[in-house]
Length: 156
Image (cartoon, rainbow, N blue to C red; front, side, top):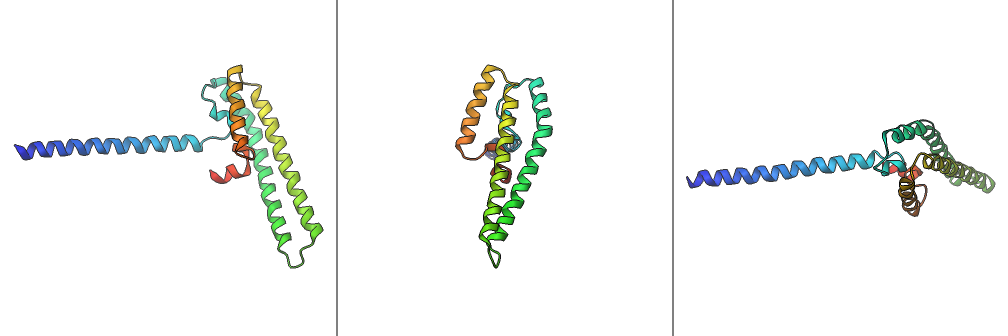
């Protein structure tokens, strides 16, 4: 009788521990997926309507490929700068020209993101705009362009 109670108690405790571990695993997996699935600032606003979400998707169909192309150009220009810096006969004017190309590309990326933010802002109500404003402040305070920055792409 005593061994039966012990075995029942042990299996019950083991089942509870297993359930906690499985629940924790799926919760963490979901939150990780949800965080990594962020493609833009509006993904951080939970109360978008279905219509708003559709408009966001439509906006992104043109914006994301455009920004990706700019990012790729920026990476290529940085590689060109690195090659110019470490070539046998590093030409200062060539290095400065490569750096200038990078600045132009970064400026193009900044302008694209700013236009995108203005476009997204138009589909929000007042409460959502305030949330959006706080998200932008928080993202920009971290440096760069937040989720649209070249650094953000490397994290995901």
